[in-house]
Length: 201
Image 1: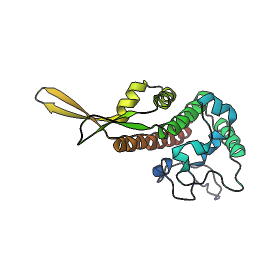
Image 2: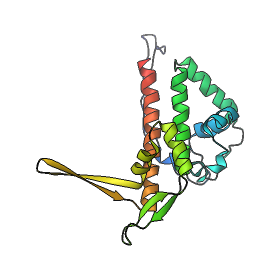
Image 3: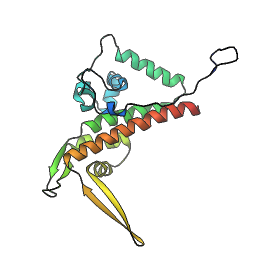
Image 4: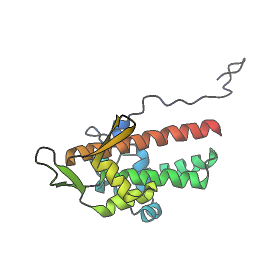
């Protein structure tokens, strides 16, 4: 926004075409969003959230670009944290943001095993329950609820005065796609929340 003398006097922020697909997949030579690599540059936060290096996360390795020449993730992360403080984000806000980012990384590392549901439509189960539990803890939800949300889908049908709910197991491929969709939506909503939080400040 400009004043009568054409000086900048304010601004509005809009979310415009956030590339959600980048959260779970990247073109060769591309990185995921920089904040993930920046988070992993902090040894203290890696200990806090039980994280390791970027090479260990499916969501960060698709583009085969873990580092960018001339880019200092650690220094840039300090700038991000300072910006949070300058913009009025509380310590609790920051912790919520970082724990959600860590949860997204863990969602990408959940592995699945086929279960004997039916030969035509096999179900799936979680092969590494420890990763599921860590993601659920960071999301502050029960692990069983997260597992059900990833490995099944529900169909609700109204019948007269009642409602019938059918739980359909998902194959490993479908569960992976379901989890990826969840990760993309979490990141998108986090992005929207950050923009909205700043506009309300």
